[in-house]
Length: 232
Image 1: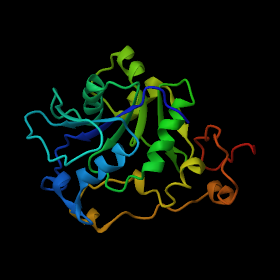
Image 2: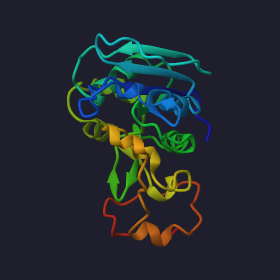
Image 3: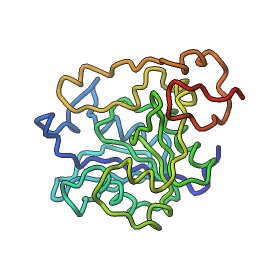
């Protein structure tokens, strides 16, 4: 799938990390910081990166990157990831934006590419993955113009914002081939999470369909995980 104009990678790095008890983005997993791992995955599929840090925070070490990168400050502190996303959208120069957490060290570039391709193939304003019949707000992809046109409030949840944009869901059957254990959906909240990702096994009707060849474009996945999609 060709994405005309490319994509901005927005990396949310402004959380308070109260449950971690320290600067978790500087914490190391398998020889690299959490932020470095998230940036590496995003730069593999994006044309520029925007790192959103908290108001007054010192710029983090972003390393050497293969694409242009900027660090910006969220103008409204303690508003959560939705406010960070909107700050990143203000700085984006590409038509699509991929949004990931800086505390998501197990992101897989093919998974992220599938999110962008799902959005590029649809007219809706956002794309987000489905797990066990439920929409997951991160990582996600959005149309920059669609977000700006709605001038959304900075408070509220990420999920509520995505729903105002109309979401093209990335079906579980579509992303499982790229990330069989669902590592791209996991983040680090506590020090014990640095032990590594947990397996998110295939279950329900998805398990009965997993052996079939995944079509190039999946139909929208039902919200009820007990109901199978119509066969192609």
